[in-house]
Length: 226
Image (cartoon, rainbow, N blue to C red):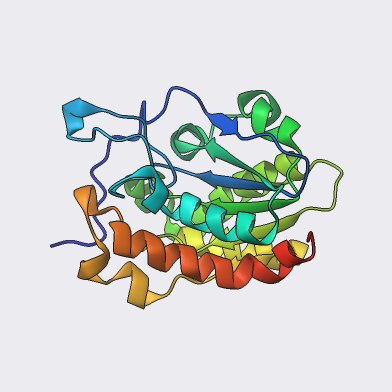
């Protein structure tokens, strides 16, 4: 079993890039790909409407973390921004504010950036991994700053679930530049066969492990909004 293989088609994972539940308190934005949310797509064997490959909405990592957040700040608002299009098209996607208008207008206080799996490995090989780190990093930084606008926002940049060191390096560099938090998932999560489900995506146990890792990092910031 190749734990680093991701066969989920990157196109048409969702029909709506952004959605949220409106409340008046802390605004938390999850920015991710199919692990964060995937619309039902029976032709690939996926019938649910949640993060792949959780068994239900409540068990995907977003909703586990959301429960932790709401237990702490009951009036918090949680949004999801789906970015598989950015992963595939970051080289030519110039107007990020327009592409992700809803997420920008959400004006989050806290952003969890957890994506990169759909950035083509072949492209990175062709340009060279050092160059890929710089090129992707520049686009990733623009995305971060588009979401931040001119506001003071707490960003958490998450190590990829799949092993793409050049992307993780890009995230680390951006996190260090802005004083953000870089979140290591660690090999115990990323290379654990017991955490894998459909298409090598995290099953319920994997989702819970990811959620607990994230909560450990964001908890203190969330508690400031009590």
